[in-house]
Image (tube, rainbow, N blue to C red; front, side):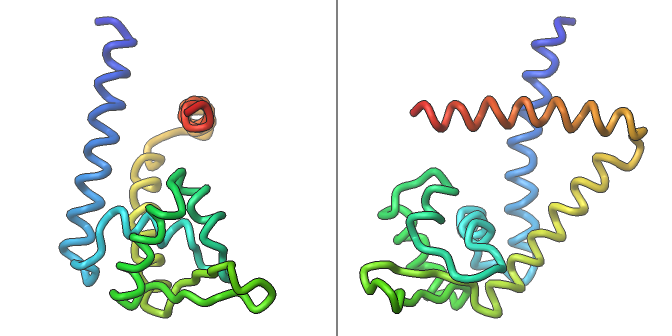
Length: 148
């Protein structure tokens, strides 16, 4: 069988399965009201200091208007806090609430388990090869986003 066909099949199924499993993980856990989109926004905001909406939108490759809709929902769910910058009142800063930080950690645990499972039976050399291949794929996706 053609390796390109095999790899395409694997990648398509892998991306779809990760999304489905992430959604199921959230629905089974204590974050039933959190969508995958919500979780991606939570991840982009992160655990560090507050971030402005523009930088979060850029990290997610969405408009600030689209991000505003998501942030409004996350504020209502008690996962994100929003404040105006003291230096420039036009700038809106977002950060995770304590509940948001717990949701972030919960989702990171899912990702850690996924990576640990993927690497469990690989040699150090195989891990390097996998990292190089996935890095190349990631670069391709980044370039696609930048060229839109």
